[in-house]
Amino acid sequence: MHIWITGASGMIGAACVRLALAQGHSVTAVIRPGGRTDLFPASDRLTVLPLGLEEYAAYAEKPSACDWFLHFAWSGTTGAARADEERQQANVGWTLTAVRLAARLGAQVFVGAGSQAEYGRTTEVLTLDTPTHPETAYGRAKLAAGKASREEAHKLGLRHVWLRILSVYGPGNVENSLVMAAIHGFQKGDPPAFTPGEQLWDYLYADDAARACLLAAERGRDGAVYVLGSGKERPLKDYLAVIRDVCAPDAELVLGGKPYPEGAVMRLCADISELTKDTGFTPQVGFREGIELTVSGDPSTRCARSG
Image (cartoon, rainbow, N blue to C red; front, side, top):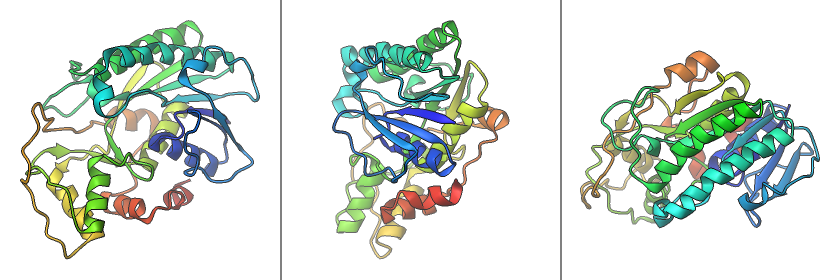
């Protein structure tokens, strides 16, 4: 099987590259020009292709066949860029060009990366039937990209699967994420200020997310939208306690040092029953093990055992 993975320099994309190689597949890892490659293992089955989103439409070479096309590339995923309506809407068009590229390469399936931001704030466990009311430019663009890419994929004869991804952590995570800020803070003896931590949250380790993405490509139902998380919720303060225990067990965990931000999401949990039913996916990495692996800095450790 030959798999194309865009956004491969990101945390989930890189985890998919590692796992696909561990499973014996060949991979074309599409990264932004200048993107990092240190999360990839050395392999003669890996081709790294620097290609910006705006270059997809003109890309005409066909260095190898493509069976599965996994699309994670997206511009403006953090900070103020998530509120940039023009930039976010440009991603919708680039997602469509990614579908067309997949079709030109002969792919059988297009798997796209959506987001919990498509739902907006809700107190419900997120299911396929949860109404979508995105409140940010990022969420609106992800919702539009999922619908438009499904239509384009079907027009071009590709199977289409869309994954609405919740909170994923692991090697390659952005440094300003809560998990990485907490890890680095405890390691340095200066943890950041935390809220009271009463939010109910659902965290998934990157290798588990990668395994779900590959299973979705292999077995996902055409046209399906799956919610991707661990399927289990815990108060955020419990996750912070685990990070403290791994990084600095003698440190005090101080909660309530900062207020909840305006519009804070107080519950985020995935119902993964449809994903499990269709693909057989169940998470394998508990949160403590995932934090230990993230802290170790060796992204190949869990993949080698789960591949």
